[in-house]
Image (tube, helix red, strand yellow):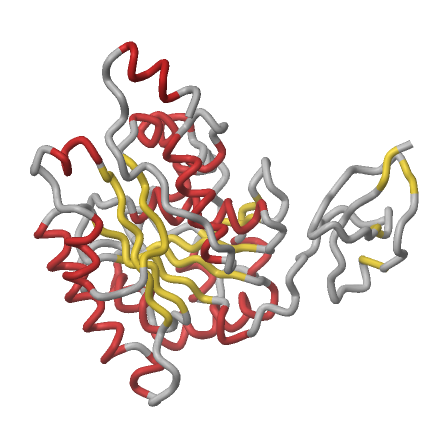
Length: 324
Protein backbone atom coordinates (compact mmCIF):
# COMPACT_ATOMS: atom_id res chain seq x y z
CA UNK A 1 0.00 0.00 0.00
CA UNK A 2 1.06 3.57 -0.66
CA UNK A 3 0.74 6.55 1.66
CA UNK A 4 -1.26 9.41 0.20
CA UNK A 5 0.51 12.73 0.65
CA UNK A 6 -1.47 15.52 -0.99
CA UNK A 7 -2.01 19.18 -0.12
CA UNK A 8 -4.44 20.80 2.29
CA UNK A 9 -6.27 23.72 0.71
CA UNK A 10 -9.38 25.76 1.36
CA UNK A 11 -11.49 23.84 -1.10
CA UNK A 12 -14.39 21.43 -0.87
CA UNK A 13 -12.39 19.04 -3.04
CA UNK A 14 -9.89 18.35 -0.25
CA UNK A 15 -10.39 16.98 3.24
CA UNK A 16 -7.77 16.72 5.97
CA UNK A 17 -7.57 13.21 7.38
CA UNK A 18 -4.16 13.09 9.04
CA UNK A 19 -2.72 9.93 7.45
CA UNK A 20 -4.14 6.98 5.61
CA UNK A 21 -3.14 4.36 3.04
CA UNK A 22 -4.39 4.03 -0.51
CA UNK A 23 -3.38 3.18 -4.05
CA UNK A 24 -3.87 6.83 -5.09
CA UNK A 25 -1.04 9.07 -6.26
CA UNK A 26 1.61 10.52 -3.97
CA UNK A 27 2.07 14.18 -3.11
CA UNK A 28 4.35 15.55 -0.42
CA UNK A 29 4.39 19.05 1.07
CA UNK A 30 6.25 20.00 4.24
CA UNK A 31 5.92 16.45 5.60
CA UNK A 32 2.17 16.86 6.21
CA UNK A 33 -0.22 14.07 5.31
CA UNK A 34 -3.42 14.86 3.45
CA UNK A 35 -5.81 13.13 1.11
CA UNK A 36 -8.18 14.13 -1.69
CA UNK A 37 -11.75 13.42 -2.60
CA UNK A 38 -11.25 10.76 -5.27
CA UNK A 39 -14.16 12.14 -7.29
CA UNK A 40 -12.21 15.24 -8.31
CA UNK A 41 -9.48 15.41 -10.93
CA UNK A 42 -7.86 18.88 -10.63
CA UNK A 43 -5.09 19.34 -8.09
CA UNK A 44 -5.70 22.34 -5.86
CA UNK A 45 -3.28 24.78 -4.33
CA UNK A 46 -1.11 24.06 -1.34
CA UNK A 47 -0.86 27.74 -0.53
CA UNK A 48 -4.31 29.29 -0.27
CA UNK A 49 -2.87 31.53 2.42
CA UNK A 50 -0.66 33.48 -0.02
CA UNK A 51 -1.72 37.11 0.67
CA UNK A 52 -3.80 38.63 -2.10
CA UNK A 53 -1.39 41.57 -2.32
CA UNK A 54 1.64 39.28 -2.87
CA UNK A 55 0.40 37.28 -5.85
CA UNK A 56 1.32 39.18 -9.03
CA UNK A 57 4.96 38.78 -10.09
CA UNK A 58 6.37 40.64 -13.08
CA UNK A 59 9.55 39.45 -14.79
CA UNK A 60 10.96 42.51 -16.51
CA UNK A 61 14.10 44.38 -17.54
CA UNK A 62 13.52 46.88 -20.33
CA UNK A 63 16.13 45.32 -22.61
CA UNK A 64 15.31 42.52 -25.03
CA UNK A 65 17.11 39.17 -25.15
CA UNK A 66 18.10 38.99 -21.47
CA UNK A 67 16.06 35.89 -20.69
CA UNK A 68 12.74 37.25 -19.40
CA UNK A 69 10.61 34.62 -21.09
CA UNK A 70 13.02 31.81 -20.19
CA UNK A 71 12.93 33.04 -16.61
CA UNK A 72 9.14 33.47 -16.54
CA UNK A 73 8.70 29.87 -17.72
CA UNK A 74 11.09 28.46 -15.11
CA UNK A 75 9.80 30.65 -12.26
CA UNK A 76 6.20 29.67 -13.00
CA UNK A 77 7.04 25.98 -13.38
CA UNK A 78 9.17 26.03 -10.22
CA UNK A 79 6.40 27.58 -8.13
CA UNK A 80 3.93 25.06 -9.50
CA UNK A 81 6.36 22.25 -8.64
CA UNK A 82 6.32 23.49 -5.05
CA UNK A 83 2.55 23.06 -5.06
CA UNK A 84 1.47 26.64 -5.73
CA UNK A 85 -1.33 27.00 -8.23
CA UNK A 86 0.31 29.27 -10.78
CA UNK A 87 -0.77 31.12 -13.91
CA UNK A 88 1.81 32.62 -16.27
CA UNK A 89 0.73 35.39 -18.67
CA UNK A 90 2.43 36.43 -21.90
CA UNK A 91 2.15 40.24 -22.20
CA UNK A 92 4.03 40.40 -25.52
CA UNK A 93 0.93 41.00 -27.66
CA UNK A 94 1.55 40.23 -31.33
CA UNK A 95 4.90 38.56 -30.64
CA UNK A 96 4.03 35.73 -28.29
CA UNK A 97 6.54 32.96 -27.63
CA UNK A 98 5.94 31.88 -24.04
CA UNK A 99 3.73 29.10 -25.40
CA UNK A 100 6.75 27.70 -27.26
CA UNK A 101 8.70 27.44 -23.98
CA UNK A 102 5.99 25.10 -22.68
CA UNK A 103 5.37 23.21 -25.93
CA UNK A 104 1.81 24.58 -26.03
CA UNK A 105 1.91 26.41 -29.37
CA UNK A 106 -0.65 24.03 -30.95
CA UNK A 107 -3.04 24.20 -28.01
CA UNK A 108 -3.96 27.90 -28.01
CA UNK A 109 -7.64 28.50 -28.79
CA UNK A 110 -8.43 31.69 -26.87
CA UNK A 111 -5.89 34.24 -25.68
CA UNK A 112 -5.37 37.17 -23.30
CA UNK A 113 -7.05 39.69 -25.64
CA UNK A 114 -10.05 37.40 -26.15
CA UNK A 115 -10.43 37.33 -22.38
CA UNK A 116 -10.07 41.11 -22.03
CA UNK A 117 -12.74 41.58 -24.74
CA UNK A 118 -15.11 39.08 -23.05
CA UNK A 119 -14.97 36.76 -26.05
CA UNK A 120 -14.42 33.79 -23.73
CA UNK A 121 -14.40 32.72 -20.10
CA UNK A 122 -11.24 32.40 -18.00
CA UNK A 123 -11.29 28.59 -18.05
CA UNK A 124 -11.52 28.64 -21.85
CA UNK A 125 -8.45 30.85 -22.24
CA UNK A 126 -6.20 29.02 -19.78
CA UNK A 127 -4.06 26.17 -21.10
CA UNK A 128 -3.08 23.55 -18.51
CA UNK A 129 0.46 22.22 -18.53
CA UNK A 130 0.56 18.49 -19.20
CA UNK A 131 3.55 17.94 -16.90
CA UNK A 132 2.31 19.91 -13.93
CA UNK A 133 -1.41 20.20 -13.06
CA UNK A 134 -0.77 23.29 -10.93
CA UNK A 135 0.48 25.34 -13.91
CA UNK A 136 -1.60 27.26 -16.46
CA UNK A 137 -0.70 29.54 -19.38
CA UNK A 138 -2.63 32.58 -20.58
CA UNK A 139 -1.16 33.21 -24.03
CA UNK A 140 -0.76 36.54 -25.80
CA UNK A 141 -2.62 37.24 -29.01
CA UNK A 142 -0.59 36.63 -32.15
CA UNK A 143 -2.80 38.76 -34.42
CA UNK A 144 -3.37 41.93 -32.32
CA UNK A 145 -0.87 44.57 -31.20
CA UNK A 146 -0.16 46.07 -27.78
CA UNK A 147 -2.84 48.76 -28.22
CA UNK A 148 -5.38 45.98 -27.62
CA UNK A 149 -4.40 45.99 -23.92
CA UNK A 150 -6.83 48.10 -21.89
CA UNK A 151 -6.24 49.09 -18.27
CA UNK A 152 -9.71 48.13 -17.05
CA UNK A 153 -9.63 44.84 -18.96
CA UNK A 154 -6.21 43.84 -17.65
CA UNK A 155 -7.27 44.76 -14.11
CA UNK A 156 -10.44 42.67 -14.36
CA UNK A 157 -8.54 39.62 -15.62
CA UNK A 158 -5.86 39.93 -12.93
CA UNK A 159 -8.48 40.27 -10.18
CA UNK A 160 -10.16 37.09 -11.39
CA UNK A 161 -6.80 35.35 -11.45
CA UNK A 162 -6.08 36.52 -7.89
CA UNK A 163 -9.31 34.80 -6.88
CA UNK A 164 -8.23 31.50 -8.41
CA UNK A 165 -4.43 31.31 -8.20
CA UNK A 166 -1.64 31.60 -5.63
CA UNK A 167 0.78 33.28 -8.03
CA UNK A 168 0.37 35.08 -11.36
CA UNK A 169 3.68 35.43 -13.26
CA UNK A 170 3.65 38.22 -15.86
CA UNK A 171 6.17 37.85 -18.68
CA UNK A 172 6.91 41.44 -19.70
CA UNK A 173 7.94 42.32 -23.25
CA UNK A 174 11.03 44.40 -23.94
CA UNK A 175 10.88 48.18 -23.92
CA UNK A 176 8.87 50.61 -21.81
CA UNK A 177 5.73 50.85 -23.91
CA UNK A 178 2.18 49.55 -23.42
CA UNK A 179 2.91 45.84 -22.93
CA UNK A 180 5.64 46.28 -20.34
CA UNK A 181 3.69 49.08 -18.62
CA UNK A 182 0.61 46.88 -18.19
CA UNK A 183 2.73 43.96 -16.95
CA UNK A 184 4.48 46.21 -14.43
CA UNK A 185 1.59 48.41 -13.30
CA UNK A 186 -0.33 45.82 -11.31
CA UNK A 187 2.66 43.94 -9.89
CA UNK A 188 3.24 43.15 -6.22
CA UNK A 189 6.68 41.66 -6.84
CA UNK A 190 9.17 42.48 -9.61
CA UNK A 191 12.06 40.28 -10.70
CA UNK A 192 14.52 42.49 -12.61
CA UNK A 193 16.28 40.27 -15.12
CA UNK A 194 19.62 41.53 -16.40
CA UNK A 195 22.69 40.38 -18.30
CA UNK A 196 26.17 41.29 -16.98
CA UNK A 197 26.63 44.15 -19.44
CA UNK A 198 26.32 47.93 -19.13
CA UNK A 199 23.47 48.41 -21.63
CA UNK A 200 21.37 45.81 -19.82
CA UNK A 201 22.10 47.41 -16.46
CA UNK A 202 21.10 50.85 -17.71
CA UNK A 203 17.77 49.55 -19.03
CA UNK A 204 17.15 47.65 -15.79
CA UNK A 205 17.85 50.81 -13.80
CA UNK A 206 15.33 52.68 -15.96
CA UNK A 207 12.73 50.00 -15.28
CA UNK A 208 13.40 50.24 -11.55
CA UNK A 209 12.65 53.95 -11.75
CA UNK A 210 9.39 53.33 -13.64
CA UNK A 211 8.26 50.72 -11.10
CA UNK A 212 9.09 53.07 -8.22
CA UNK A 213 7.15 55.97 -9.73
CA UNK A 214 4.46 54.64 -12.08
CA UNK A 215 3.22 51.34 -10.64
CA UNK A 216 -0.26 51.22 -9.09
CA UNK A 217 1.31 50.90 -5.65
CA UNK A 218 3.42 54.02 -6.23
CA UNK A 219 0.50 56.08 -7.52
CA UNK A 220 -1.64 55.08 -4.52
CA UNK A 221 1.18 55.64 -1.99
CA UNK A 222 1.06 52.02 -0.89
CA UNK A 223 3.89 49.70 0.12
CA UNK A 224 6.42 49.69 -2.76
CA UNK A 225 6.69 46.83 -5.20
CA UNK A 226 9.09 44.21 -3.81
CA UNK A 227 11.97 44.23 -6.32
CA UNK A 228 14.83 41.76 -6.61
CA UNK A 229 17.61 41.03 -9.09
CA UNK A 230 18.12 37.98 -11.28
CA UNK A 231 21.39 37.87 -13.23
CA UNK A 232 21.29 35.73 -16.37
CA UNK A 233 23.94 34.44 -18.80
CA UNK A 234 26.62 34.77 -16.14
CA UNK A 235 30.08 33.43 -17.03
CA UNK A 236 32.64 33.26 -14.18
CA UNK A 237 35.36 32.59 -16.73
CA UNK A 238 34.66 35.85 -18.57
CA UNK A 239 34.43 37.73 -15.28
CA UNK A 240 37.84 36.36 -14.26
CA UNK A 241 39.34 37.51 -17.57
CA UNK A 242 37.84 40.98 -17.21
CA UNK A 243 35.40 40.55 -20.08
CA UNK A 244 32.19 40.66 -18.06
CA UNK A 245 30.78 42.59 -15.11
CA UNK A 246 30.92 40.75 -11.79
CA UNK A 247 28.00 40.15 -9.44
CA UNK A 248 29.44 42.83 -7.15
CA UNK A 249 29.58 45.34 -10.02
CA UNK A 250 25.96 44.67 -10.93
CA UNK A 251 24.70 44.92 -7.36
CA UNK A 252 26.56 48.18 -6.81
CA UNK A 253 24.98 49.62 -9.94
CA UNK A 254 21.38 48.57 -9.25
CA UNK A 255 21.34 48.49 -5.45
CA UNK A 256 18.65 45.81 -5.02
CA UNK A 257 18.68 42.43 -3.34
CA UNK A 258 20.01 39.48 -5.32
CA UNK A 259 17.56 36.65 -5.96
CA UNK A 260 19.49 34.43 -8.34
CA UNK A 261 22.43 33.94 -10.71
CA UNK A 262 21.78 31.87 -13.84
CA UNK A 263 24.98 30.71 -15.57
CA UNK A 264 25.47 30.84 -19.32
CA UNK A 265 24.35 27.46 -20.66
CA UNK A 266 23.48 25.79 -23.97
CA UNK A 267 20.74 23.96 -22.04
CA UNK A 268 18.56 27.08 -22.22
CA UNK A 269 18.40 27.14 -26.03
CA UNK A 270 17.95 23.35 -26.13
CA UNK A 271 14.99 23.57 -23.76
CA UNK A 272 13.33 26.32 -25.78
CA UNK A 273 13.59 24.20 -28.92
CA UNK A 274 12.21 21.18 -27.06
CA UNK A 275 9.31 23.11 -25.54
CA UNK A 276 10.13 22.71 -21.87
CA UNK A 277 11.28 25.12 -19.14
CA UNK A 278 14.96 25.00 -18.23
CA UNK A 279 14.11 24.19 -14.61
CA UNK A 280 12.73 20.80 -15.68
CA UNK A 281 16.23 19.48 -16.49
CA UNK A 282 17.99 17.16 -14.04
CA UNK A 283 20.77 17.94 -11.55
CA UNK A 284 23.43 17.77 -14.29
CA UNK A 285 22.25 21.15 -15.61
CA UNK A 286 23.77 24.14 -13.81
CA UNK A 287 21.10 26.43 -15.25
CA UNK A 288 18.27 24.22 -13.97
CA UNK A 289 19.90 24.00 -10.55
CA UNK A 290 20.30 27.79 -10.46
CA UNK A 291 16.61 28.28 -11.23
CA UNK A 292 15.67 25.80 -8.50
CA UNK A 293 17.88 27.73 -6.06
CA UNK A 294 16.11 30.92 -7.14
CA UNK A 295 12.70 29.44 -6.38
CA UNK A 296 13.87 28.34 -2.93
CA UNK A 297 15.18 31.84 -2.15
CA UNK A 298 11.97 33.40 -3.42
CA UNK A 299 10.05 31.22 -0.97
CA UNK A 300 12.24 32.34 1.92
CA UNK A 301 14.90 29.65 2.15
CA UNK A 302 18.51 30.59 2.87
CA UNK A 303 20.30 29.11 -0.13
CA UNK A 304 23.95 29.95 -0.90
CA UNK A 305 24.78 31.27 -4.37
CA UNK A 306 26.56 28.87 -6.71
CA UNK A 307 28.26 28.98 -10.12
CA UNK A 308 30.35 32.01 -9.18
CA UNK A 309 33.78 30.46 -9.79
CA UNK A 310 35.35 29.37 -13.09
CA UNK A 311 35.09 25.66 -13.74
CA UNK A 312 38.33 23.66 -13.68
CA UNK A 313 39.83 23.15 -17.12
CA UNK A 314 42.71 20.71 -16.66
CA UNK A 315 42.16 16.96 -16.35
CA UNK A 316 43.74 16.86 -12.88
CA UNK A 317 41.71 19.87 -11.73
CA UNK A 318 38.50 18.26 -12.96
CA UNK A 319 39.27 15.05 -11.11
CA UNK A 320 40.12 16.91 -7.93
CA UNK A 321 36.90 18.96 -8.09
CA UNK A 322 34.83 15.78 -7.97
CA UNK A 323 36.24 14.92 -4.57
CA UNK A 324 35.70 18.34 -2.96
